[in-house]
Image (cartoon, rainbow, N blue to C red; front, top):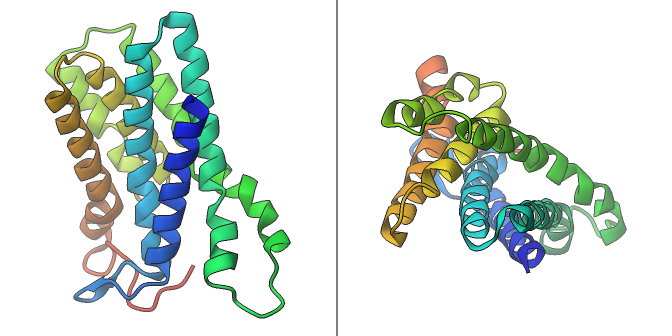
Length: 213
């Protein structure tokens, strides 16, 4: 079941990415289509890791927890890989393009978008088991990855997810865990758009219109 949950989450992220990539969604001079669609996994993957890992950690004992988290992550990895086949099926570039041409993407997308953030998140989560969980340490955890957002965004994705998991396991109510999920989305959006805008100025927060991967 954890693998299936991760798989469904990954496929949902992949499908949303492909659809937005080929859309014409734009805000002023900024566009979400083309390269702008990368915002979807940049936000969706840390949110999925947080939601999946937190729920599985709460519902499993220590040893079973590790297996469940690993299975969920493997499912998310596999689901994100659907990005390339979905691209070929929904938006073929030519009449001769075949589904087999997308097979390398089944592995590549997970390597790019899931494996590094998951490893960073696991490390951060482990660190929080060794230090006091206080408002200060949580603020540090949520913000420590922001300087990497411009060049190594996968690090930022991992620090957000790992901190959120530790935070989510410390609260009791579903409402509080939902609020943490909303915080993950907000901070991931800041990392994806706000940090480039701050560093690069106008035009740095998102690809210009017509940007293509």
